Structure formats: C-alpha cells, structure tokens
Amino acid sequence: MSTSSRIDRAFRNALYLPLTRHSRYILFSDCHRGTGSANDNFLKNEYLYLAALKYYFQWDFTYLELGDGDELWENRSVRLIKEMHRESFEMLAEYYQDDRMYALYGNHDLVKKNLHFPQKHLCSCYCDQRLCELPLFPGITYYSGIILQDQENQKDIYLTHGHQADLLNSTFWRLSRFLVRYVWKPLEYLGIPDPTSAAKNNTRKKQSEKRLTAWAEENGHILITGHTHHPMIGTRESPYFNAGSCIHPSGITGIEIENRCMTLVKWSIGSRDNMTLYAQREILGETICIDDY
Image 1 (spheres, rainbow, N blue to C red):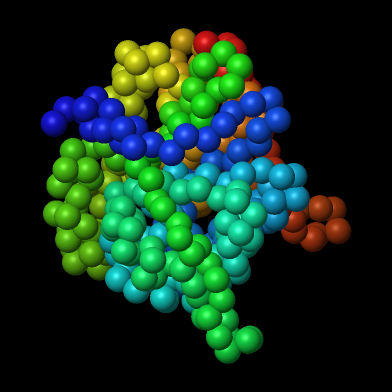
Image 2 (cartoon, rainbow, N blue to C red):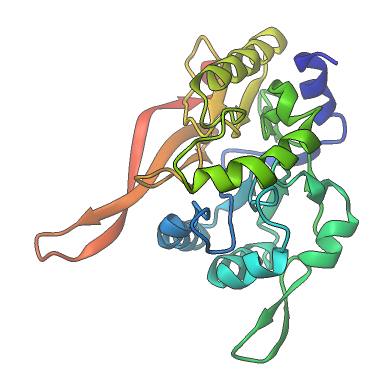
C-alpha cells in the first residue's frame, strides 16, 4: 500500500469537529509519557506541559492530541505511566469531562486503536489521596484522523499522526516495536539513538515530511501531523504543518488554532531578574490563516 493510500485510509473513519471563527483548538503531539525511568523523555518537560494545559483550559481551548501520547513501545504498563504522570492525567481528565479533549493514536500507542484497550486501561486512575479509583477517560475513542470542518469556506483541516508516511512505523509497526523495546531501548542508555525513528534519523525525517507535504499539496488539504517531532508552520505555497513534540530538550511545541488561523508556539522556561523561573509562551514564525489558501 502506498503512502498516499495509507494517509487516505486514516481519514475514512475520521472524527469531524466544527471549525468556526469562535473555535479554539490547541494541538499537541508526541508526549511519549513514560514510567519515570531514564528513558522517560517527557518527564523533564511535564511542568511546562501542565502550565500550558492550565493556560489553554482557562482560555477555553479544546485539546487535541495527535498521537504517541503514551510511550507504549518501550513500556508495557499503562498503570505505571498513569501513576508517574498523575497530575497530567488529572488535568486531561478535566478537559475530557468538559467535552474538550479528543485524541489520535500514533505508532507508539497504536494499541489504543482497539476499543478494548482504553476501556481497560484509561477509564480510571487510582488516587492515592482518596484511596480509590477516579474517572479518567470513560468511553474514550482514539481516532486515526480528525477533520476540522470549516463552517465558512469549506477549507477543512486534516489531522493525523503522520506515521503513515513511514513504512517501518506503519505497516511493519510490530517489528519496529520489538526492536525499540528489546534492542534500542537498552542501547539508548549508552547514548545510541534509534536509527529507525523518524524523530532521531534526519534522513527518515526528511523523507516522511516530503511524503506528507506531497499528499497535502496533491489533495489540496491543510494537513497537520506530529511523528517527526520537527515543528513546522506551513507556507502559502505548502499547506503542511507539524506540531512538533512535548519532549524537545528546550521545551514543548504545539499549534494553536484560533480565528481560523494557525500559530506555532513553544513553551519553555524563562527567568526573571529576581532569579525566579516561569513558563513562557513564545510564537514561532508567522501565523497562517485558512483563507490564505
């Protein structure tokens, strides 16, 4: 199956959400929440992530996660992930209970495609303070694609994880998972990066981005993905965007959609003259509006 066919298939059963001038969406991708081990690349940025979640909740944004939210190739235990990142899950649960959270699955959490998996592992979490199970995401469905349906000029925005552009991480994902879990995870402790990863291998990254860009241009769709961890803002000539990831060494990136315009943002640690630290939001590049296409 070709790259184009795999991407097309991701949108066959896509979730449709409305997009108006009043819509506010925040798109994050590739959190790779882990178990707190040395391989948990999300851990160092969790406080930034929490600050961003609180900011967007207060400003009435809807949270869209573009896949690879949990690192389920390196880790088998969802329970340990939930325990390690309890605050993040509790904040996401607030979005979900307010009907403001929707999520895709990526290659590293593709098991969420099976409805039985989230029903078993993500409906609730144990609260140490109350000594009981609390609701998390009861009844949640993880999608392969989301289409933000433009209510004005029918210029819809297509969202998917992006692994469909990478044969090894889509068709042969089970082989890749085996290699990551039993070969590359131990070697990562020694500082050896995974050469099969589009996020860590520049050649594979560029190939994936080239294929995703080609699909967006050939189909005339605005396409936003994650997967490569490389944040990108589209141009008026090319309608391909990438939300980046939440595991960058210097912060987290995401895409805000507001007033039918898309803005790439970065959250990082700033310092004041009195030597206190704070979470700062920075706009990267130019804001691109749907009507520019």
